[in-house]
Image (cartoon, rainbow, N blue to C red; front, side, top):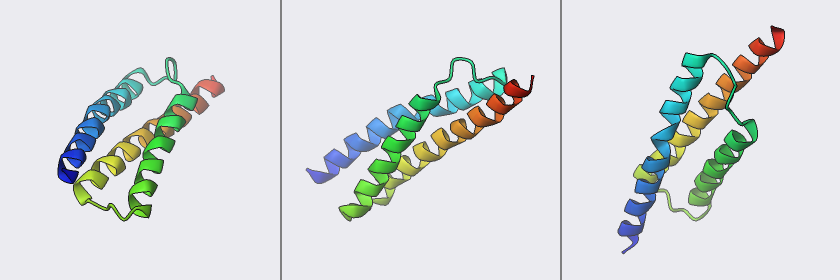
Length: 93
């Protein structure tokens, strides 16, 4: 039964994870922060980080579940970095 829970957790992470490559591509295409919410991105990244820490603290280190937490965290962090990059460029203009 524990493995079924992990499968559903992975499905949740995959479902959320599909949106981040699109977000990153949109930011790169538009070269703008318009339509982006930094507090939202930071909240999502904090959630992924809490999920990772929770897995570590409970010693529930199933690699294929952790992989999706880390992957999503990296993608959101990339979007945050792009936000700051384009925000600074916009501010100079």
